[in-house]
Length: 231
Image (cartoon, rainbow, N blue to C red; front, side, top):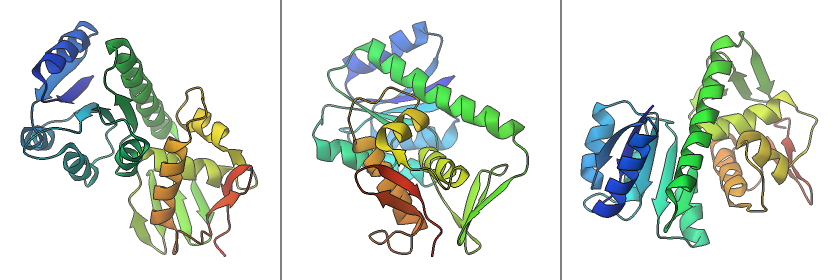
């Protein structure tokens, strides 16, 4: 597995690079946002580790540039640990967020969890048969991993797609936030609603005509979320 580590702190960068190489990962590094963008455009990576506070091009701008063309898992490493910072990072398309100071063991666990989800999804996609799911004006092609609305392609991240797929495959079921997190993230839920809330909000912004008046991703107050028929 090949990782891109974007970190301007030399001590942290060298520590993480050395540790991850000892865990049999191939690691390339970048110490600023401009170098990171060039390396991303020229290479193929299985996961990206991204510090937000980097020079020349900010970490958030790097994140946005990557998300314009790729759904590669992105793990943010940052000393900015307020709820607004975490929500902003996840809202722009990051898959996970680890605050500094951190242990290399925690970072390794997060990397493996994100890679495992990506690998499992790819394997399931490779063996899936042609199947079309529909809800109102939405159409999901499982084999092609695509979602369309009124014939126009909707660009979803991996987790946004997984959430919508779960709801469309189980149209009568109401999912609590705990169930969504456990199913999509495949990790224990400890009451942190940020990840679920942000991804639901981003999904609504993409599939709904009016995100404040959703027709597809419906809130069941006091319980969770379910699929709507789009009417």
